[in-house]
Length: 59
Image (cartoon, rainbow, N blue to C red; front, side, top):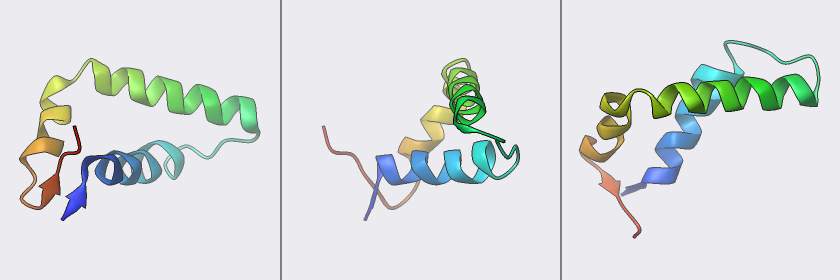
């Protein structure tokens, strides 16, 4: 089983960090915050985390 946090972590590493390399810690933080805020505005994408076949949600 895959934990929900692992899916989010993989998404962030793949799509927020690797696609837009930060030059410093401040830029990294800004990129991550921007990416996660974008995810907040797309509940359809967040819902997909829960629909993945092997997800285990720890409440």
